[in-house]
Image 1 (cartoon, rainbow, N blue to C red):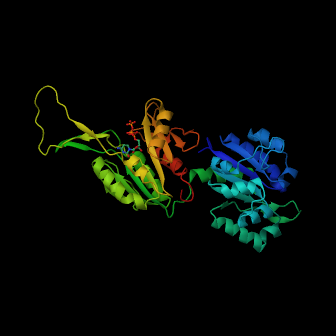
Image 2: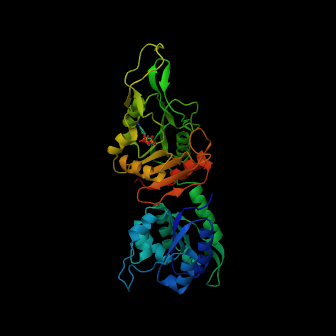
Image 3: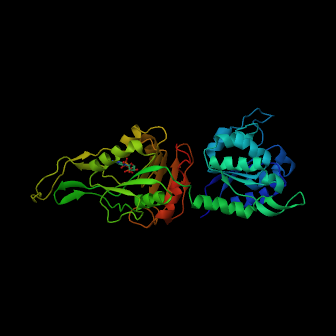
Length: 400
Ligand code: CTP
């Protein structure tokens, strides 16, 4: 696992450990992350923006607006841009402000408006770190789902020795890598996933279908359930089945059955993943008797099936997050973006059949993730389970 394509916002507050941020940025960038830095005023006393801007290859942000041009720094879009915000070192002062919703600098307004996970690495003197008010503030951040990287033990700037040292850059990097490798817990979330092909009956012995194995949707169901989600998998005909015992599997055959099963459960789900390869057309009539052969040609009139994702996309409620797939062979990104809009997806997972090791029947997949308003992120070829983890990482931490 690397940080390729990940956007990391590093918030630096005033503390001697701020000098270690130069190494931290270097490590993050080396892992493929794009890094932007926000500094508080007191952080400027410990390390220069020039050093950090050079290492991160981005201007360092500090003020609400540029005093020369009047240009405003949009903290809301910064918070939306990031996949992870790391605040290191976190001073007792900024900790207290974060715990109480104060917003008197760019770092704090960005923290308050960030929708991405936030990780903090506190650093302070040992007695400050032990103080009940600091402990209460750290507990409160944890209640707000902030990931707290507890300080380490060692020599402190005060000359004393004890617990209060900021974790080393390597340890913070490891926590970031682990975070993306093991997505957040999905405890309390309800997933509805369609997977596999559908079969559209021509007569009692023949049908129209496709080569979908259901592997990707099943991997998503197993991974989400392993992370604590309550999962219903609406599965078209497949020789495979999920392994997690907690998954409710609803076996269906046709697109119509898949739609009915999904529509029934859609209102109570908060993450809906349309991974099924639904047959686009179905025979106008299904013969109740086996069709006999006659003549040298045969035509079967077809009618369009209901588009499950598009139909349910129209009734997407507040707090529901819809993920769709797009299998494309040309103009991949443009077609995927068009589907994102038309089907009201929040995220579209683009599969290109041109990529080796991707798509139907493979154990591996290589995808491009296209989020509403975000730039596309391409993954390496990875196992479908790793792709599933990667996709689940894109789900907002709190309900959308
Ligand atoms: N989908 C669906 N119901 C359908 C067709 C598609 O729910 N009847 C969902 C798929 O599960 C997938 C997404 O819509 O998440 C895209 O499906 P795809 O077949 O790639 O796109 P289409 O809309 O069918 O467009 P086209 O075949 O023209 O590319």
